[in-house]
Length: 84
Image: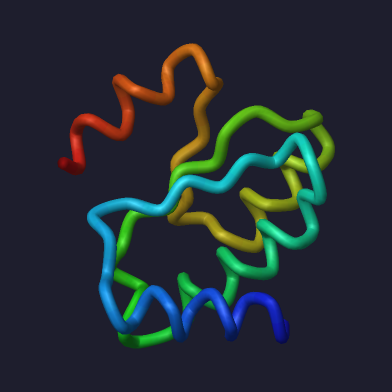
């Protein structure tokens, strides 16, 4: 959770409208970061959008971060635009 905490601290300083995490490369790092952000009081209100990834990895992330939004790279702009 060290990476998640570091990302969370950076995000707390200047909260974004939305967080985008790609699950294709190093999905465990993205999942850990998302778990931390979804649980931390200062960041839990920020929508987290997950992009692509293997079916099994996506299922795991959905279980750990049920508030996450899941999409493909092709639809990412459409999804993120809702939060800007």
